[in-house]
Length: 258
Image (cartoon, rainbow, N blue to C red; front, side):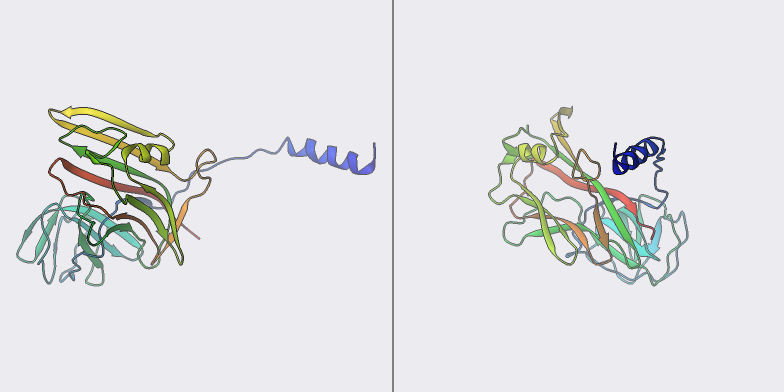
């Protein structure tokens, strides 16, 4: 046996004794609806609010309605809830604040339901980190409900789309991840991690899909977003139909600690 062979054997035998410990991260969890931020209302907070408050005072509420998503970002964190009511210049939402906010906070109130008409002007729904934050997106979940049946040949309950919805990342360059025109396409792009629920209640049907990026049996990478970057869904067809009662996307991951 040569000297090199002896050294390689010794190295390999030593490496067999190395223990590897995998630890979970302990940074902030990201779990947010994609929201149409291009058409969002952006009022200014007029009075500080504390942790556990469910009402904020703002300078104007025109264009804000119950059911909208509200994002409040400050000091590198983003809070999200659903608007319950608007009274004068006060906005009440369904979750208690998990951070104190001031007049310096960035407020964005927009639509999260993607069952809209994007045929004339495409509608873009996105998540984007606030100033001072970087996020690693590990997966996203897609949820649809309808009053009509769904199958692999339809998009939700609708006829397969002409253009399709586009999932893309914008981070200094633009990268399309996939385009889907029917429910079967979601299953294909989500490694068949998709399921139909027939009649959740009377005349209510549902479809669920989950796309995971991280993990060696998936893409093997996460989607890293810094402030100004975004993960987006583009709606390019008319999805506004009375039978299509919800089309939403939730993005999940964690903040990055350098």
